[in-house]
Image (cartoon, rainbow, N blue to C red):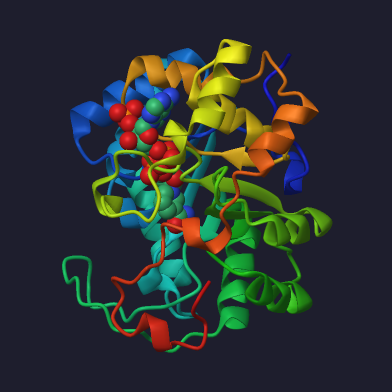
Length: 314
Ligand SMILES: NC(=O)c1ccc[n+]([C@@H]2O[C@H](COP(=O)([O-])OP(=O)(O)OC[C@H]3O[C@@H](n4cnc5c(N)ncnc54)[C@H](OP(=O)(O)O)[C@@H]3O)[C@@H](O)[C@H]2O)c1
């Protein structure tokens, strides 16, 4: 079975359905090791963000790949994201250019508005968080300009809810190509996924493994779903790991995913999900694991005043 590739993106772009999440990686040696291992294992889709503060490190690795002839630019898919401090019509271009400079690229494949909320920008080393005025429609126009200027092939959204996406689509000249949101087998966001699919928007799951072991979510309402007996039993039946079942489940729902691993064995596991199919009975058992909103992990409570903002929750 060939690896799944989403081909319905603009400009003939092809996005491999499994990408490498680089969210928590900030150590230079580790990034180089993980990216090189991932590349050798067949990863061609890499997910970063201005917020992760690792674009420049990733850029150095990419530069080595291109200059050694290991891969051509057009054969890899790079996503990065406009940070909250760039969610203002006057700063989209500034942050787009910063990301390209960091990554040492002329263009990225996909540029996402990371969050539907904007913060004032006080400079890169100032961590103050004050919600700024922003207008999604004006921001989207600026995102469209980035496509016209050749800085990104496609544009999309992350962490936006259906109401926010509908509003953008109503006035967009270029529709969002993708939506990256938290999605795992116990948090399935079926309405949102259905809406995106109906509108030709490719959904990309972050936390596709439920981010087990993450220090940020030590206090959880439920134990990480990867440890569920139902998933373990299904995994045993297919001779696969629990992580592979979770990723395969998403693929069969036509959802892409960007799992992160620093471990070579797990990197391999996470991309080896194209040689089996979960049958409909087991898919139904996995459907039943959905706990809805109670299983959402990313609530962005660290942004002061977010809970009173009219765009929240998202
Ligand atoms: N758009 C957004 O707002 C947003 C927010 C958060 C994250 N993201 C993106 O999503 C990516 C993934 O998020 P995440 O890393 O927090 O969640 P995740 O991919 O669901 O989980 C990663 C965790 O699972 C472990 N793991 C990886 N493969 C495994 C396997 N086969 N078996 C068992 N454990 C495994 C990893 O540990 P090891 O490294 O030790 O294997 C790591 O602790 C990020 O890197 C980032 O690119 C986007």
